Image (cartoon, rainbow, N blue to C red):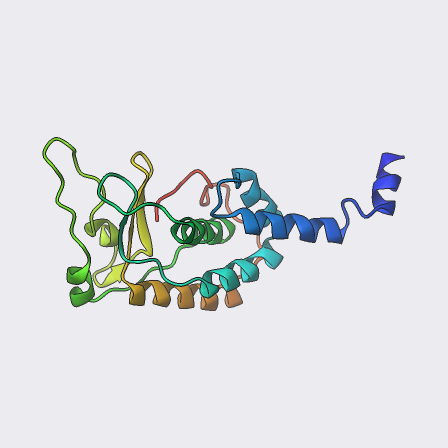
Length: 188
């Protein structure tokens, strides 16, 4: 009886699914999002992926350098929204995209000398660590300290463009492996 009533009022129908998708996407990068939002996006992956890319392309680049921690500038809506959109793309595709970084752009990134006894907390080298020469992440993240380090603007733009191209060719209906990107894994 409840199922019939639910169908009659549109609960569980396409409108409800669309509303859930829109709500989950809107919460990414805010303090009200939960990991369950990634599950909603995953259940509607074919509809979600183009929307996530469109939202990512709409956002301006995050100012390069450190965000969070003692030496970084404070987190902002833009840095949180950007990182959560990128995280959603990784989770929903089991893929990551890297962009070009020149020696000059790398050298121009801000440096943050660590005070004695503080230990190492995110530097520009984390953008390129373990990647092919001349390649960078959009951002690097250290969960234990809540610190991110963002790539140069040109690198960020290139990565956004690569995501747009990748999503056009990605088979959103294919089953992803069990060991794919996990919402609890935060590396940029």
